[in-house]
Length: 594
Ligand code: ADP
Ligand code: MG
Image 1 (cartoon, helix red, strand yellow):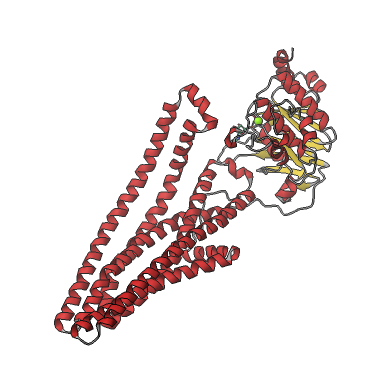
Image 2: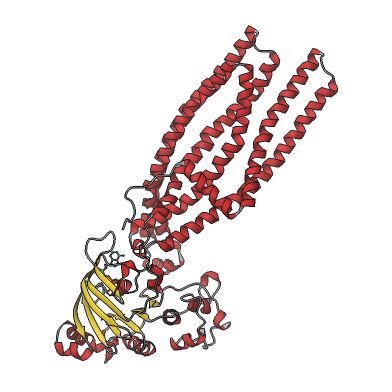
């Protein structure tokens, strides 16, 4: 599987534009049309303004020469003012529409990202380089919106203006247009240079940003704050935070510095161009090739023209190019390879076979699972035991179909998991993870979200999991909001855990995994929970994971793991009789159950 990094396909600006326009038009044609019209309106108005201005100049000049009436001159002045007001109104409406349109495109891009993330293999999320990818994809999304809106507004709005002005210059003296064009040539070079600088900046600075944001969370986020205070680790995290922020700022600063230097050089060219154009105009007037009236009109609009041109090349195009570099990351994320497997036939899970199965985490050199061989029949309860780090959780993730074997095979009803579509593989599987989630939602939502379509009774399942819904604390029953974030009540570790178990049981399943979600409770209570769990799932295939051997006794079969391998297997009596690793561990832990 291609993970990340590697070679990246670069999208052209045109591709990006077409893709985003299609996305917007496809989802909201009316809004998109309004947006295009508003841009055109602004362009036409701005160009029109120059025309009204020139008209006014001409009338005034004629008035001075006595070839027109004062009424006509004042009239053209009023027309110019009215058109200016119209332009202001059109601009305001256009901005409003533009904001709305940006949000629309952003929403659609966000949807694409989320859908993509759901299709990427979960194992990719284990690789910390992947987090950079996600981070960059989200900034890339904002950048993409900017690229699209700015490019369209330059293309539709500004080009109308420049075409109008260009023809106007050309009609006076073609050489003026040439001079004007030449003074902006360096701007194009500088745009390209800057685009490259900012693309590199994004790649190099993202890891620092991710780190300083994380250390910031370590200092002030709710889930960290208690520990951080108690350890008095604010200083420790603060130092790491400042270190990474410093690196980040330094990278930013260096790029900004280079970018500014290029800009100064550019301004120098523009100034030369401006002076050159004025000198040329002056020369033509002096030679009698251009009238004083035309000189006035050109000279009056020259400032605005240079300002606008500079704004487009320096600010708008520079901004577009900067965002264009960052927006590539959005597409790089969409390019990440998805999990294969196309067989969608529902699985019966009569037989699960692991054959010489090995698994290595991405970005890791040592295998977490080595040459595992195991056969499990439907309805069996299998306990997976072993010390921390022996590979128990990893094995369950493979059994659940979340990760695929890197070597060897996992067969379900004789079918290789690599051929099975992920949806088919997940359907009928349930789990209570070692690090289960505490959703900041109601009790009912917390339980039902494992199987939104199921019509099971939430209360029955909560009862099975011994969740104390009737202890008086849950004033709104199933609708009681949990977690402080949105104004709900907080639960104890044990209560969250029972809720996680209820969630696992709620999902329709023929196989369920209980991956020691019991860190918070004592061995005897854990043993009781496991006994009850095995009873509830007696006709299902169940895997119960624990490093406390007393909880495993109730299983039909116990497998003992050590450093990624299965070292012993059998039921409790057989393993005790064997007098190996299991017995040794069991006797060491016996005092917990005394
Ligand atoms: P257990 O559940 O038995 O405590 P795990 O399955 O969590 O053990 O871990 C097995 C081995 O895999 C350990 O050596 C652990 O360090 C390694 N491991 C777990 N998660 C990752 C990961 N995301 N990336 C790399 N190695 C990992
Ligand atoms: Mg574990």
